[in-house]
Length: 250
Ligand code: NDP
Ligand code: 8X3
Image (cartoon, rainbow, N blue to C red; front, side, top):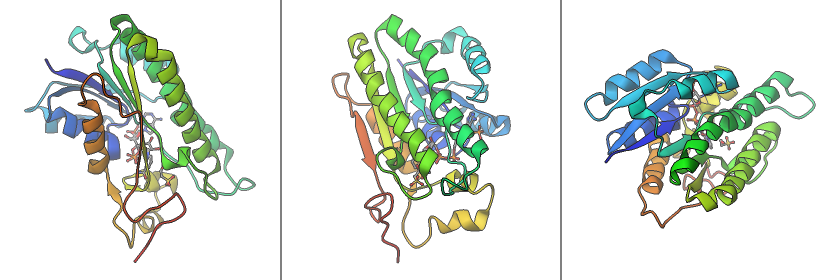
């Protein structure tokens, strides 16, 4: 029987690539994000491969998150795999110059949003005593880098949430895993630099950055291991990257 994967942030980048790959490989998909038209495109792309249901909500709004999850039709109610992927960096500025709205957004989306989505889904996994959660962290959750301040803090929080979820859910037979990527060429930098395409493109120049499909491939691998195997925490870099601050460029 096909498992059902609930993927946040499925409208672009890592989440979209993961929805496409899992949807073409024996998973039913619940895809979420704020951009309805992107979710419609995903539905169209997967319609000949699997059942897909989309939910449009902002992870910052707890009431909307709960309402959306409660609105799932019976055939999509059981979530076997939760991929907590929605998130972004907002800004890259030194502590004294950073925008407080950017800081609030990163904490609200990357940390609080992840918690809002996770708890109701975890509660049903606990009842069934089965399930798998894959949290998308970052190298920024393992190290800090100049001007990364609150983005790094938000991803360090994901790192801590990931390991504490694993401790708490161990008794319920639920797998908890983290993928912590380095530089992946998505819309991430476009969002971080508020639509500045030139600045965003520069981040991925002169080396072979990871692509969203590389992360999707890893997530698919992690999600299809036997029941007794959990890849608990995987740091994945482009070969040219050695740390958050060391990238070998041509
Ligand atoms: P993208 O910008 O391409 O995708 C981000 C996704 O998050 C979009 O689908 C977006 O959907 C969703 N999202 C953002 N804000 C909200 C919100 N308030 N409510 C609901 N959904 C939201 O970036 P990536 O694919 O690169 O990022 C995915 C994850 O990977 C993030 O958690 C990021 O921190 C992490 N990551 C990325 C790395 C990279 O180098 N790209 C490296 C390490 C980790 P929509 O706008 O439609 O709401
Ligand atoms: C995204 C990777 O290094 O841009 O989490 O913060 S980095």
